Image 1 (cartoon, helix red, strand yellow):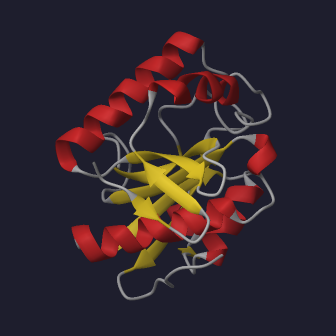
Image 2 (image 1 turned 180 degrees about the horizontal axis):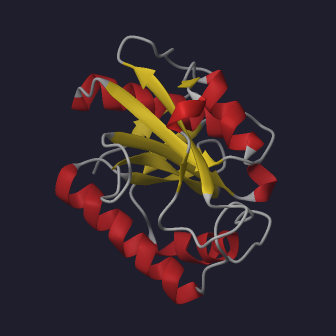
Image 3 (image 1 turned 60 degrees about the vertical axis):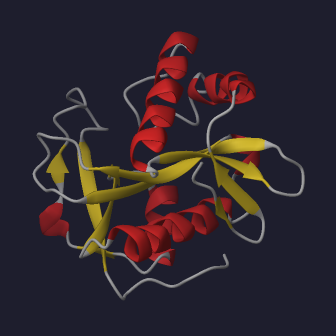
Length: 183
């Protein structure tokens, strides 16, 4: 079991009890505003199974995130190899939280922890983060992490249908450029 801890959060393996709040998050149009659509409970269950399989196989991936003080599941954060077919390669960091967890610094705290884990344990030259161009909340997290954005890296995501969500941006953080801990 691969567990990452921060002052306030626990990034851990997935539990059966995570499925209901995860499915509710994925059915929330506001949480999924920068994705092509909401997910069904079955799609959410399949994603959890895949996330846990990756954690079991390689020891890193998309961890469930809970508030350490309460045990409340609030979303996910982690690392994954960039999908094939993208115009770049590498290790991508990402996060998604339930709406009640927004605005508390949890996304930045979790993201900083997974980025540090990537550099300290996996050794990539850089970590990437990708989002829809209009996703200002995620872009703000990327900025707080010290990631840089080059507009020339922008691309149309081949996995997203034509429309306003297709244009994506890439942020990069080189090894040695990350800040540890905290919010």
